[in-house]
Length: 178
Image (cartoon, one colour):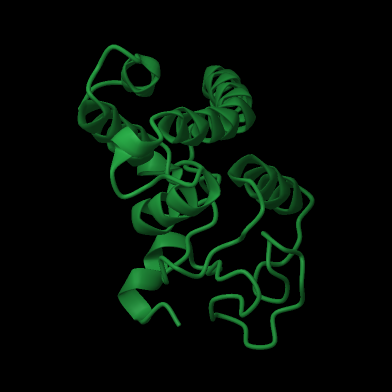
């Protein structure tokens, strides 16, 4: 698996065949999938209007990778700050494991995991990710309120009926998701 920036360059490279660019976008989505891969992919297909045949609208691939890049622009500064804080804590002798932030997962799939790939927030990815991270930092209880849309959860421990985000993150796959 290559890096997100390398694959994003391939998506934006108009000299490559559209199928290769689509494959590079898929790889980018594996690196940055805040709703989980399947729901993030569905969101990108819908929001960027990616046609079944990428040759019909190759610019759609660029729109999709740009949306993923905006998510990275939200998460990466927080990840760098977290790493800086952990280094300082370790130098001070605080080596105990602390709870991991929601973006601390492969592909950042725990930020706003949606067990149903077709039921996810409709807002731009970066807007949802920023809202989730801000609400989590503010101490909003994810059992009573959805961190993505902010609405009260009528059934704690279940996916939000409004936006589809599950409070258990990727762990929702192991207990039914629903």
